[in-house]
Length: 164
Image 1: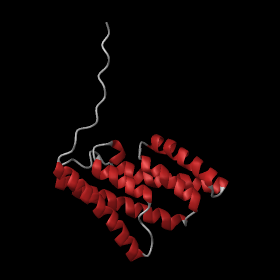
Image 2: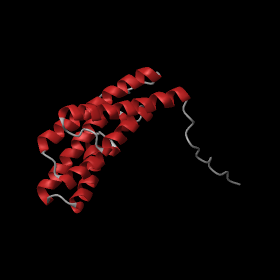
Image 3: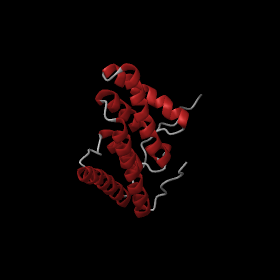
Image 4: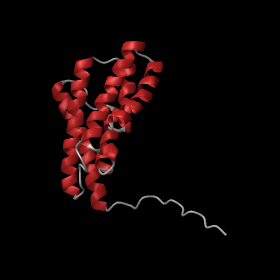
C-alpha cells in the first residue's frame, strides 16, 4: 500500500500587524508615486509598479521582491520593449513578443520580476519617449524599494534579503 503525498496547504495567515503594515506601505508607496509624478507633471504610477509594490510589501523575502529584481527587472524589461519596437514597431503583436522576451532577459540577468513583463508590454503598445520613460521608471522603482526598506523595519521583516 502506498501513501498519498501530503496535500499542499495555503500559506499561514499573516499576523494582523504585519498585514496592516504591509498594506499601509503599499498604499503609501503608490501614493508617493502619484505625488512625485504630479510634481514632475509625469505619470509615475503604472500598473506593473503596483504589482511590484505588492511583492515588495507582501512577500519581501522572495527573489522577485529584491531590489536587484525590482529595479533591474523593470529596466531590462523596458529596454526589451524598446528593442522590439525598433524591430517591429508598436502594436499588439510587438507587445506579446516583448512581454515574452522580457522573461528570458530577466532570467539570463538573474533579475526575475514578473510584474516587469507587463512593463515591456506597455512600452511596445505605447512607444513612450525612451529617455524620459527609463528615467521615470528607474525613479519609481527606487522609490518602491525605499518604501520597502521602511516597511521592513516597521514590520521587523528582513528587506532586502540581498542587494546584488
